[in-house]
Length: 360
Image (cartoon, rainbow, N blue to C red):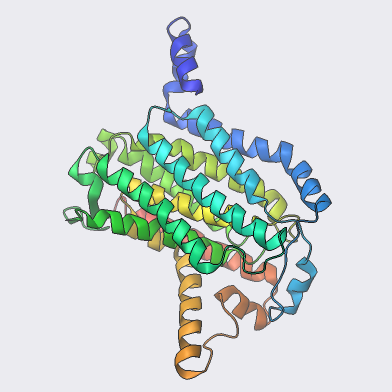
């Protein structure tokens, strides 16, 4: 929105030309979203407490979690608002990728809000129900997938890029829609499963979003993409602004969500953030790298799948409790130790993912 104003002003005042640079607008996006959180965060927490919108915990969960009962949740609403406002202010709204990322993030946020509302306010422990939630996620994911497929301007936008090999790109054809749907819906649910400890999900999300912002910048730059031997995607660079807004909103939320948490994000935050990084990974053609950088999300999800499968097939559990972070808690690890160690692993995996830019 502001880009139009600055373009007009630059015709009369050369100073405003500086806002043409993605990097500066990205920094402004970070600062805008984090400032929104610092201004409105305390008031949001007070309102959530006032309306008694508090966290519930599993009765069979770690005993230390019983202290979290009643902690305000649905804080993801402010994450969503911060990302949307910062993106609308600093991104070029003529860019199709901006609109598909906003649509995906907001639509999954709405699904999460409905689920949270039914659980916490309507007192329905099932929320939307697993099947209804999955169907709604699938519909939103398919809309984004079909849009990206039919608006693709080059074959590179629908090819599966294999990291480490500069000459290997698999044409997906209509399979692109299925892959994109899987990445968006899968990442959304993976982040949601990881969101079980104070700050556990938000910091890896921030790191992955920051790394994807770098991928967006180089993918949307014809010179850098040629130098790094990655496909050039026209307009993808603008997604850096969206990623920057995610980083700022995530850090702002972490201020209040760090141990011991003053607020939780709820499904409205976890589902929308997961879908957001999923759709960005598709746009910048880094679906496989996302699996590496989001390794914590992958492991947490796999731990749940293995736990359920093992119990149904042989009547035994592999872990003391799933997702995996609860297993370590029940082994006696203090919650901050689990959180920080998972953060460190996430940082390592993100750096490995970024290294694939150069190792080809």
